[in-house]
Amino acid sequence: MEEEIIRITIDENISRMKVSNVESFDGLCYFFSNNVMCDLLEQGFNVLMLNIRDYTDVNYDHYFLVANHEYLIDLTYSQFLPKEGKIRFFEDFPANILSKSQDGKIILNELINNYYIKLKDNYLNLYLGSFKGLEKKR
Image (cartoon, rainbow, N blue to C red; front, top):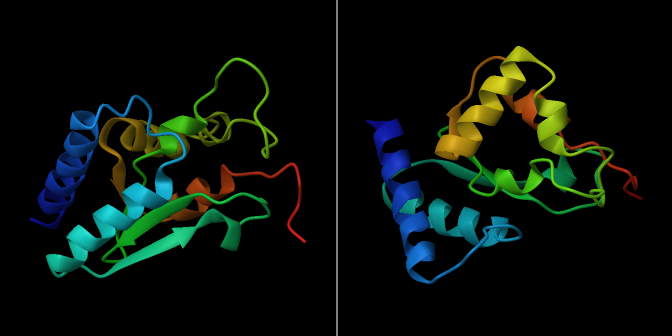
């Protein structure tokens, strides 16, 4: 039931953005995280909005959610897929780093296709470990 509510909440938020003709979700992590968090809180979920800056060496803000201590939600992770040219702030595209392990590939697939994943063992650490900074925090 929890997972179904999360999926529906994410779908509703994405649908609202598509109606608004938003072409790319890149850079909208705080907006999406805040909206989904508020919707889930209204439905009785325990939700934390977290910033990778607080858990990695990256001098960059990227917000994601952890719901009920068991679901990682990131509607904008696709912005970290490999693109032409060099990526700023990171040693490599986070998706490249994530895809180096079997569990990382599972996480990547779920975040790209469903925008969330049910946390297991080391999933949160693998997710956070995909963000390796070029410029270290001070």
